Image (cartoon, rainbow over all chains, first blue to last red):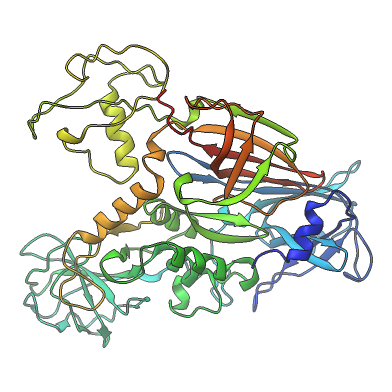
Length: 427
Length: 112
C-alpha cells in the first residue's frame, strides 16, 4: 500500500498540522491488547492521549554485506497514559499521521521496552518490525517454533532403490509438509553413499510418493538400506520474495501454518513485494527457482530469511509504515524523482567513502594464456585492510555470489586514490 | 539454535519447474552482477541530502540528483547533473519539516 497521493502532497508542503496516532496492532486471535493513543482527542479515538515526542530513526543498508540495520522509534507520552499491565513486550505498535482528513502509517515496529519515571514522560522504545520478526505471532501457535515438525528422525524399515517413485521409509510417522512447489523432502543418511535430500509430491505417513530421481541441493540419490536414518526437513523452491509473502501475508495460505509468522496483514505490503517480484526478471519457477531446505525448527524468522534474501540481492525494509521485500538495483537500473538545487536544503558529498570497502584494481592480462595464474603481486593495496589486492577482488566477487573470474578476464577497476602502481606486465 | 537455511540452485531433472543444470545458480549470479555490478565493484560517492517536507521515497528507491552546486569526482563534469542514486538510508524527520537521505551515486567515468 502506497501513501494516498493527497496525504503525500500535504506531507511535502511546508504548511501542515499533523496529528499523531499511536496504536498497538492486535494480532487476530491472539491476546495482545489493542490500545490507541493520539495527539488529538477527536475523531481518532475516544481514549486520546498526548504523544509529547516521537523520534523515528530510519534503517539503512550496509554494502557490500547487504546487511540491514533496522529502523526504530521512541515515543514519549504522559506518565500513566497507558497501563503497563495491559502491554506485552513484542506487541506490534504502529505510528500514523493524520493530515486533515487523511491518515497514513509512517512506522511499524515491535515494542521492546517501556521506561517509566517519577519525573519525566513514559518512553516506549519500539524496534522496526523489519528487524523484529523473531518468534511467531500466529494465533494458537503457543510455543511452537517456526517450521515445527522438521528434524524428526526415524530409521528405514524397508530397502529403497534409487529412482523408485515410492519411498516406503518407516513405521514412524514423520511430518512432511509441502510448500509452494508442492514437494516435501526427507534427509537421508544412507549406508551406501553420501547423505542426500529426497523430494516427492505425496506423503502417506509411512511412505513418500512421487519421488524425483535427483536429490535436492546438489545431492545424489542412492540406494537406502534397512536401518538407515531419515529426517524430516522443510523444502520449497521459488523466488525469495515469494517466500516472504508466503510467510508474512496472513491471507496467503500457500505455506502450512507451521511455516508462517502470523502478523496482521496490514503491516506487510504484499502488493508492493509482488510488484518487486514482477519487476525483477527472475521468476519463481523454472531454472531460476531458489531451493531452500530447512532441517530443523528455527527460533528467529529474521535470521532464517536474511541469508536467503541477501544471497539473491534482496532485503526486507520498512517503507511508508509497512515492511516490504525489495530487490536492490544499482543506479543503472533505477529511476526516480528529480531533485534540483531549488529544493536542496543541505547536501554533502563524500567522494571516497571508506565504508564501502571496495578497492578494485584495473588489471588487463594480455598474456593470452588462459589458466596460467597471473597475480599482480607487486601491487599493494592501500585500502583499510592492506595486503594483496587480488584477494580483495576475489572477496568482492564472492560477496557478489560470483566465482573468481578466470585469469583472462581480470579486468577490473582501481578505485581508492590517485597513485602510480608498479604493475609491470599489466598495462 | 540458529536458523539453518541452505540455498542452492535447482537441479531436478524431468519435473515441471525444475531443470537439471546449474543454470539457475548462474542466472542468479548473473542477475546480481547485472543489477549491482560493475557499479557495485566501483567505489560510489555518498550524497547526504536534505529536502523540504516529508518525502515518500525509501530505502531501495532511486533519486535523480540534478545539482550544479554539488561536485563529483567524475572527470567530465564538476557537477552532479542528473546523477541517479540508490537510497540506502534516511527518511522524513516527522517532528521536523524535512527529509534526509543517504544516496549512493556513481561518478560516471571516474577512474579514481
